[in-house]
Image (cartoon, rainbow over all chains, first blue to last red; front, side, top):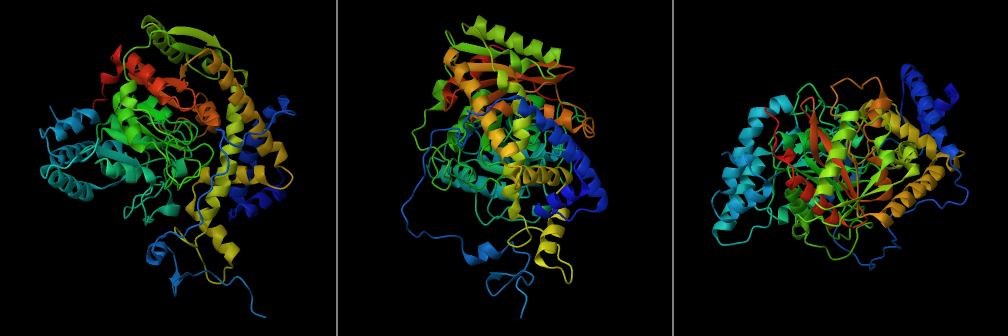
Length: 97
Length: 486
């Protein structure tokens, strides 16, 4: 079943992808194809099957709540597209009153 | 004989016995890279200067009587999905084109401790999504056996480097077959360890419940040698298994008398070509000749693995790749007046290639409100069925023998317009990641002068038996001694 253009717009927004109209059209076709392929799984009755959470029988991994040295601030900021005053710089998120 | 013709094991011996210096070894391999790299294009970055400096440092330590480690002086290619401190790590993506990690991945630290020398960062499909290395944002890598063909993927640069003798060892990562399938296409030996055996700290994440780092080499012994170096507990990866490790080299006894080899018919369907099936069955016959007992097993859920994978892996990827937003590292596209959501969305559409965007959208949809139960939860339930098939099979046998890939390496561009044919390349490897099991691919024949891969699958944490079986078969044949001519 083909996804509607509203559905594709919603997926693109959730994915944070600024797709052009042509890319949206292509996404509609390709996503619809793969979703059709997923229909195959409906053939299997999984009502009583637990989902896999982990392939090995592991339990919560805990560690002592101790401070340890982390990366130095300049190391953390060296790849930032923009930074100022030792912080990552981003566009304004909260509008002024 | 050139040093670059030797195995990693032999190189380490030469260095230890001072028949060759680390610098001689490194110069020899850098010369080989110089000679063939223009045609093969295995590397995004060649780290020649760093490699020479490190070789000289190791030679000085050796001269002062120090033990420089089991991989002392051995060159290695490292997949560009693994963080290397001070060396650009791109994941073959425009998003990370200029990313220089401030830390080393756990496996890179381990290599340094054991004396290995990184000669370069290997090309890959962008964010490890693909089966041909054609999805690299920079350039495709070529198959050393036939430059018109792909090396497989996503660890195509790593395997091509080993097949072209640009390095005797390489590290790859495997989410649905990304070590084993290119190993098969390039005539190498590639091993995906049990989930949790090797720490993923510093591996740029694709699908966290499936990703594993593993060794690529030209023979089983070298694979075991590299596995020994990288395996083991690391507290920085909470899925890392904490238990004592066997000595993998000791497992290579050459004896598989009484070993039970399971053959699941379902792995010989779904597009597996006759020539692949024949070569794999001949390999199974050879193992029987060596005293192994062959048993038929049935794994009926196998045919659902591909669809299951294409829900689970993109779902986890959509979550992992949410971090690429133009804030902390990587590309930022920000035009005057854009708000933060516009900045995220322009950055991501510019930084990610088509396949990565496609999978992010599949995963985002599969996890979104109203669809979670039908897709992600359903897939995780089917995953349980796939695991149960393996559990039942391992009641009857010690290892499973299957093809690694349904065909030999295809031509560049051949599957570009047929995404389903491309995905089918992983049909025999994907079920193994679903169950977290270890598996190895090794050469078992040729078709049209291209290598064919035999996949052996082991039980959880039983890499020793897997390596023993692979080594015994390898030593009884001469496939692994054949090299691509460049």
